Amino acid sequence: MIISKTEKYGRVLAIGDIHGCARHLEKLLEAIEPTCEDLIVTLGDYIDRGPDSKGVIDILIDLHSNQDINIVSLRGNHDAMLLMCFDQARLREYYPSKAGLDADDVDYWERVLVNSYPGGLWYSNEALETFISYGDRRGKASRWLEVQQDLNWFYFECCNDITKQMRELTIEVIPQEHIDFLRNSCVDACETDKFIFVHGGLCPDIPLADQPLFPLHWKRFNKDCKPHCSGRKVICGHTPQPDLLVHDLGHAACLDTGAYMEKGFLTCMDVMNGQCWQIDDDLQLIQQPVVHYGDKMPFVRISELPDGDRQEFKSWLMSRSAPWPTGEKKDNCAWPNDYRYWWRGKR
Image (tube, rainbow, N blue to C red):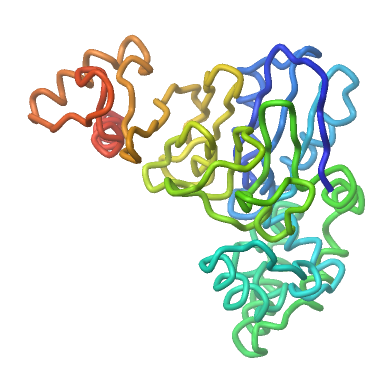
């Protein structure tokens, strides 16, 4: 399902992959202070990996029920895997078409997805963290240990076909309201007059209305992504970059900054002007630079750093005699890896 938003908004706020990081999401919403004049687009993958998938869905359901909040929530591939298990749908049934996919995507579609069972695929993507978030960890600790042992046995001994067991567990612990939210309240893409929002990516030469579902959920972002034929900028998640920074190609930007990872953070970007708000793993509001590209070479602008970091980072670069990227004024540019190395050392 694709939704179009034709209204005019003061801010269009895209939020990257949340992956069970409910406290990050709470802090981020406090920082951006959304109003009725804003549009929020959450880019999918609300569950798995992080500690509180249940809390994330609770927050999103509350936002959708708030008449003063304009919000669109996309389905990510992790959210789709839960629904596939619940419906006991084979992946070939859920993603029937590979029309328009490039060679790498077709290879991925054939090798990884079509030949997998939904239960095994979801389990291998840390679904157990989602199940645990719905339980009382103190009162049901032995129950979750039994669940983990059973799923491990089925996963490793039964050719990965644990879809039935995963479905039974989903029915047992996940409220129907949360299933309905992922199925009925979430959409697969959102478009405005200037932007297209998806979880994964797009086939560049196919209009949005004709896109197969697979790339919307699974396509990877990289510096070689081509502009979409609509001319609109594509905003996506799904692909955390190695440096865990926002990457902006000009015609596309990826906002997955690894919220659940060590040293990762949850990002919101006002796509109208590029302003970012980010919550780190200490639940502090931070400001990281965006990775831009010149002649396909990545760089960060030192001028985008907070006032307190700008001169300190520049001095550190000069002391290391680090080479400067080309493409813009040299003394305002740095390699993303140099910045990330300095920032991690500072913390």
